[in-house]
Image (cartoon, rainbow, N blue to C red):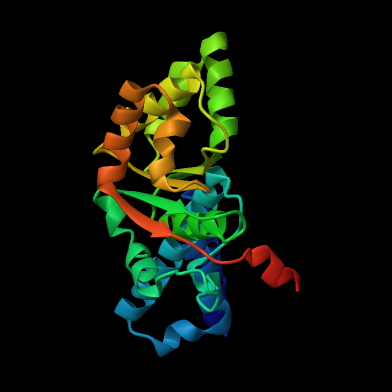
Length: 255
């Protein structure tokens, strides 16, 4: 009996030391799964390989969820939207097959762009948010910004000397979402900022632009023909297009 108690005490101490080491190594998922298996005795029902596989999967899930939360927080989406929440029943000419293809995020891996146009309230920003969320789930870094606010912030950054730093941050994002583009004509500073953003990303990173205006109206909004040509050349020809129509979705969900 004494030997059995001694063995039991040594076993408990060994478990405690193991837990401490796992926590010091910051293996949170592994630690929780290991503790659960020890407390419930489930480890007896599995082979050694199955136990190891379970613990490793628990740690992988823990790290994936932490990274996903971090990516979503940093993206600063306008809507907490997901692909499952997209409404295909509304009559707004939204092609479900196209959206499902985009949800694979292969277009992001291929450094391509997406343009979403349509009148106010048809769900452009929600759709962009959902696709951005899907990109985060696949490990892509995403930045979601209102176009006018971003241009204003970068204009201030030019004045206080932080412009290069801010542009560099945006350049590193796998997906940049520029929401509500073209609400008013661009001034010279905004034109140059947009050109630089797209030049840095052309063939390297992906961009989503949402706008109430159809693409054939962008030339006038951008102004300055030479710069407009350069911007549209870098954006339009490598872009997927979604052109939404119909009534405001806000009216539908309000009712």
